Image (cartoon, rainbow, N blue to C red; front, top):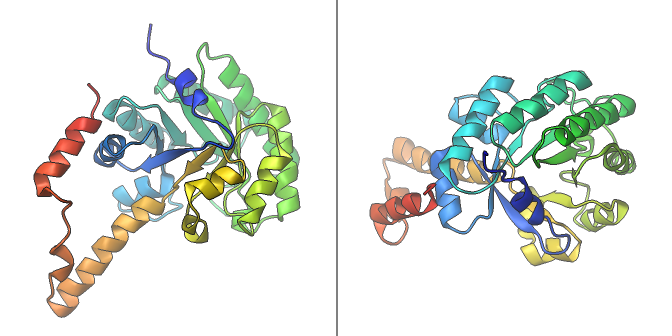
Amino acid sequence: MRHDPGPAFRALHRPGNPFILANAWDAGSARLLAALGAEAIGTTSAGFAFTRGLPDGALITRDEALAHAQDLVAATPLPVSADLENGYAQDPEGVAETVRLACEAGLAGLSIEDTDLPGTGSYSFDLSVERVRAAASAARALGRDIVLVARADGVMNGAYDLDEGLRRLRAFEEAGADCLYLPMPPSFDDVALICRSVSRPVNALAAGSFARHSRADFAGGGVARISLGSALARATHRVIVEAGRAMFGEGSFEALASGAPEGGGSAIDALLAQGARA
């Protein structure tokens, strides 16, 4: 029987004692994060798009996203949760099929958002709930465990306000979502409000101004899981941009002088081996 990573992944979701879902963008970053102490790996749609030379929000197909997720599943022994955007479908039946395919890819979890891609608007309330209900029904029929995260992205995208976001999270919970996620609410204090508004575990995003808060701060608000989104991928690309501007603009390689960790390239080699699947 194929190993089921779902139960171990579900057990990580402890409100008030959050784990960090380390969002990786390729096998190498996944293995480094695993070696450095990650308990689970997440995909990042933006980070993956960058590896394809595409901007955040580019239209990645379902097959491409799931093949990428499978690469991360194979990279480390850790459970992997995939950012599957809007489920790569408008209708509930299409979202349910994405859930079934995610299970076949070996994923321990997945997230579905309510953004009407490729734009930034949101699906109607009723359709958003039906999409989550279909995803939850498909997940329960799989024969193995998988953690379904329902995202209310309209606050972050400017499509609706916090009250509407909380209304959607409560409806997503009733529809069967295992974990709830409203990224980038108006203030950090709203993170605790989100956690109080639902009874299922809550994911929070450590990005932008929220990255200035510690794990203990998130724990104090009742968060069960802290994801990085594309923040780590963007930080990596920032280093490339800063070093590149210095090299090609000023002829300076100073940014590269301390680029390797202590131990140099051999230290990275060791971490890659440590993080790999046995």
